[in-house]
Image 1 (cartoon, helix red, strand yellow):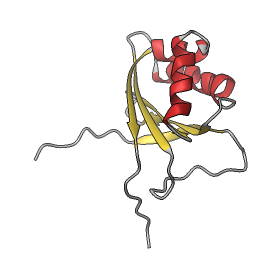
Image 2 (image 1 turned 90 degrees about the vertical axis):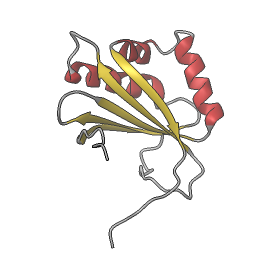
Image 3 (image 1 turned 180 degrees about the vertical axis):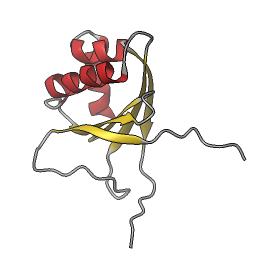
Image 4 (image 1 turned 90 degrees about the horizontal axis):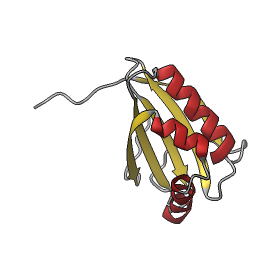
Amino acid sequence: LSSPDYHPFQVTAQYKSDNNKKVYIDYKNEILTIVNVLKPIDGVSQTELTQLLKTALADELVTQAGFISSTVHESMDNDYVVNYSQWTNQAALNTMVERLQSGNAPKLGLAFSNATPGFHPFTIVSSHFSN
């Protein structure tokens, strides 16, 4: 067996559409989960990329219809930034992607242009908790 690509992360920021909601992972929820794995481009530090992403999320994402939450993680090896986002459904995410592609989310576009992004939509199939 080969070793998995392992990068420990710490949470650096969290944004929610409703501050009374908690961010949690539960396979019983019918929500769309997006994991963006971002690697800063040459000349951009992890800290700079994280700040660009945090600004974009706070200014452009939290009011987007269908947005539930977003949590930003920095890898402890300083190589990656991960954005874990939850959306009500695929249509809501598609609307945000169209907004981004049309230039109507310039701060998010700036964050993504300073990284090599990997965009991965997921459905949650299982959750496990300590006893």
